[in-house]
Image (cartoon, rainbow, N blue to C red; front, side, top):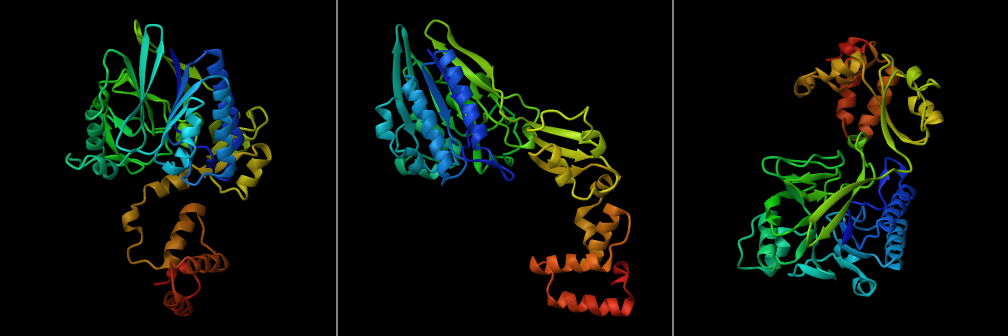
Length: 404
């Protein structure tokens, strides 16, 4: 039997101020084409179906369209919630969906739900573990010692009978790590020593009873510990850290005789994400311009700051997301000890120092007034600061660098 493994669709997500709904529709249609071409029996969706707990109308319509097309083709769906999803919203209509072989496990109710499939000699049990927290699991297992996410997951699995005579698949949304190593992040996640997105990590050996573990939560496609414990990754690039990634969808073939075979099928986005680097003149030279509809992150190496660089770029690349600089000024700033830069310095001194580092000249009084107005509105300085600044300027002259 064949399955496609998806995760982290994040339907409704935006990239800066760019709406990604059409990009997401395009990639889901592409995945649907792969499902048809490969005659898959089911699709495993491992959480973070939506980008927000209260999804947009466009996002819910897109999911409805995707699930309907799968159901119309007789392709089963096994979907769990992720930490971005609202359990109740994703679970809504699950009983009705089940009649069309769309199985949703969005709310943990004390049971690791299972669906059994048979095809000749192949007997496959698919278990669905929605995103869970330790507090949720304690409610159903009050006598168990549950101090962490790993304790919670191990408790659930310990209380779930798994028939080892069958092939067993698990769909789950957790931060799973290998022995002594964490999974590689895509850049749109945040990581501490123990967690990603406030989700504590658990060891992949929790899942030794399963022939394949379809994971969601990390956006870069990769194996964890063994080939059969795998993150599908997000189907689109959602951050600069993914610009060089090649997106794929795992095609998982499961049989009684041969076990599990995994084939990574490439995905091609409607608009790619690229990071380009060079001077403004180089990057916008006609011989270097290509795929102008792509999402662009540009790093300019010009020594001088270019007025309205974003406006200039978007004339050629309308989907430019961000522009930054890498030149002698920015490298000098990187060497500055940030922890000491503000010691015994007034607001005008700090702004003046920054201006000199960036532009190599003194800030004008008009520019300083603009910065002071912005700082006052942001609550960085108050009326006392302004009074002291005006008095010192009167006493010491008009050069901001002289103010004490």
